[in-house]
Image (cartoon, rainbow, N blue to C red; front, side, top):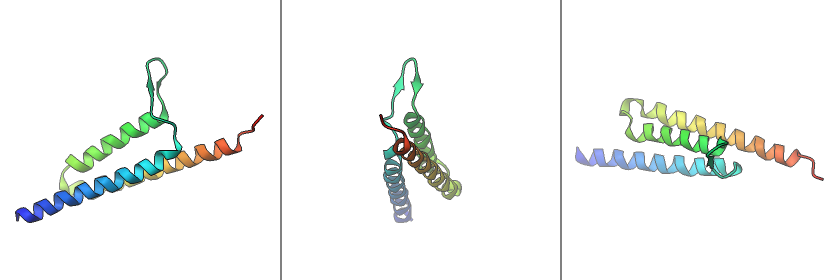
Length: 97
C-alpha cells in the first residue's frame, strides 16, 4: 500500500515538472517578470504569480479534484501561449523607423 502512495507522489511530481517546463516555454515570448514600486507588476509577473497558485492547487489540493486542477493549468498555459504569440505578432508588425 505504501508503494502505491509513493508512486502517486512521483506521478504528481512528474506532472508538476512537465507543467512547469511547458509554462516556461509558453511565457518565453513575454518580457522578464518585474514588479516596480510605482508602476506595479508587468504582465509576465502577473502570469507567473497566477501559475504558481495553480501549481500549488495541483500539489496540495485533494486528489478528487486533481484532474480538474491539471486541466486548469493546461488551459492557463494555452492562454499564456496565445498572449505571447499575439505580442510577438504585434512586435513583428510594428513599423520600424
